[in-house]
Length: 304
Image (cartoon, rainbow, N blue to C red; front, side, top):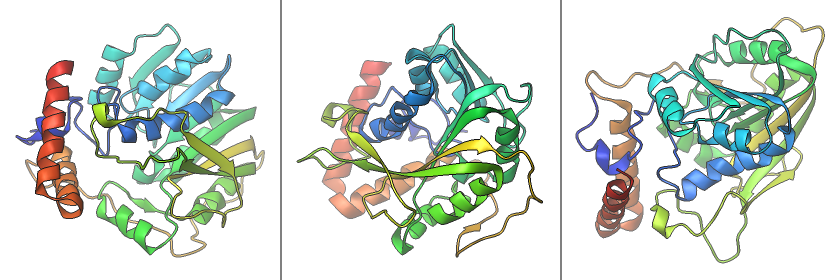
């Protein structure tokens, strides 16, 4: 059952299993997410690609449109996959429902490039995904993982407030786990750098003046990040031939918490709506909340 006010904040008609971004609401948040696919397209020319946690499909289509030989898009949400199939029909794109903890139906070493952006923080047993990725990636393949940057107490609290974020891990913890499976790992800091403009993830599309090209990805050491880091991006190569005993050790105060379920009769968008409305009201006032809601309704009517 969807929240009765879901139409105010969810023009996609895709019920959020965590957080959903779609091409129907191309605001700053959308372009920030799309920019990671823009960065990843350098690895996709004439390649077989697995988009692990493809969501509403806009990013899978982006890779398909920028040189991929075939994109296999998998997501745990049936609604998201239906949405993707509806809006993104490509001869080199296939979408199917699949949990990242149970990736199946692909032969070993099927993929040249495995991409997973803003997904693994949601996966209860992320090791199952890495075991699959290690098996499915070709020897000269590339794995790209993008995750929220838990770099200080403020970013930790922000992730804790999102009940769908289970793996509250620092960049150092993500690199530690990746190093179990891969010989080479590069770390990139994802930033927005367009002079005179500040990002507003809750703005409306007609207020957006940016594109996916207005973001930078800078190779860095693990301690070379700051509060302007939007996403921690890892590029892993050379799957190890002999894996050690696989167990989860924490190298700092990172941790994984149990999955939380919404209360009975309460869909996930309800929580996102309340949190977003509260954040806007607290930071910008009730008038700003009303204006954003009006923008949302106007855009919704144009799109539907």
